[in-house]
Length: 536
Image 1 (cartoon, rainbow, N blue to C red):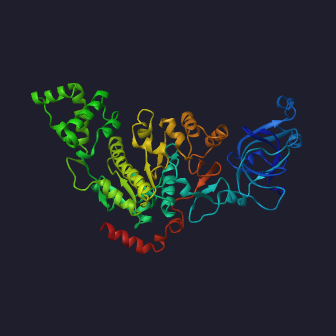
Image 2 (cartoon, rainbow, N blue to C red):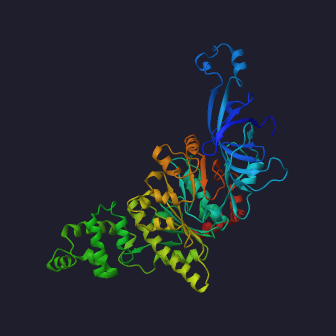
Image 3 (cartoon, one colour):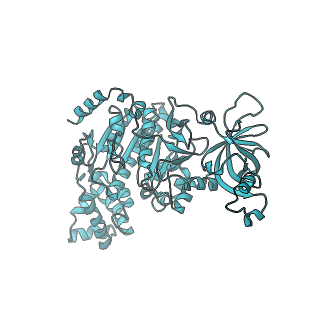
């Protein structure tokens, strides 16, 4: 460790709280930023850790009360670094090598701490590369650790083995970060994606905050992505030729779907119970038959037989009429969206379902839950069949949902298919990628099952606590998260990374970006012609 990179020496610490590093006189505390990596040269091992706090301290307590005069530059210079010094709090995460040997061992979890007076310096690019690896057929470059040039690479096949979450308050860049992860999963063939695209941001081109158009999945990988839409008119207005227009039949909607819409449709608990009774009585035509029931002796007799109070029935009927006004819901449809989506997923095609003008949360919850429940049933059946007879397993599937707290809050998480998928991890080759700006609204049990979390800036204390709940070194990471920039910085931690990393995401749409991530962009003219032909 040379004098230029050295920061100081270890003076105290513990395995649970991290170690304290007294800064050398030549190192400026103003150059230190929480979230940066340091390497500690112990007597027997090299440790890789993160700076989680920066403090000023003094060997003589009287100096706090009787500091040098503001005009006395000479005394300030003499005392600085000796009697007055900077103190860093560092959390060691990995043992990355043996300091007494020239050979380097693979990164191992920390089970001890460096000894007193161990030298501490800024980590080199080679240290980071040793831990996170290089970009290859599995690892995808997502950004760079803060103030470092080395590439931060994420093992995507490992990432998709569990459900994951991307969080951050509005305007912090989580949409572009999500798009980056989806592109990586597609590029590395780690899984197939089903994206419920509430604001039409992931399928076709979109504008960033500066008003510049950026490409999305279909433009980058035209042969590997299919766009489904609920709103064909909106798609054509945006010059998008959807591969399939989704319609939902009355007979596809089950009481379980209505139960999830209790709040958005203002349904009473008894009205929800009535939907189950009517389904049992009328079968798959229960919605059609319920809407046809008018005030008469016959309808009163049916309600009496089913033990449904008139007020509960009217509450349910008002909710069903609200759904009826959604033009994509029809009495009957010939081609069910579920079979169309499954056919493409089985062929390795990624599906983005755009909602167009149907950005109301009622439409989003209904469609996402309805389709996911049926797709999940198919995946479970195929997985069990493959175990029984040795047939092919389904392709790993990642389902991306926005406004996740609407599906996964404490009241409904146990009832929704999304809560089931999150808890089962990858039992049936199906996982979630949840996007939300209010992680505190998600059920704590579900949050604990998310393998890897990527979070941009959060300024709500409850949201921060929710994201970091159950994480080792929570207090240190809390300080790092609170100090992230408002845009283009994030913290990643959990199952798919060997240690937490504060990083700057790769610049989406920068020069050469499209060419680097998609071989289909090698001839832009041909791609543009293909796209023109597609929607013409």
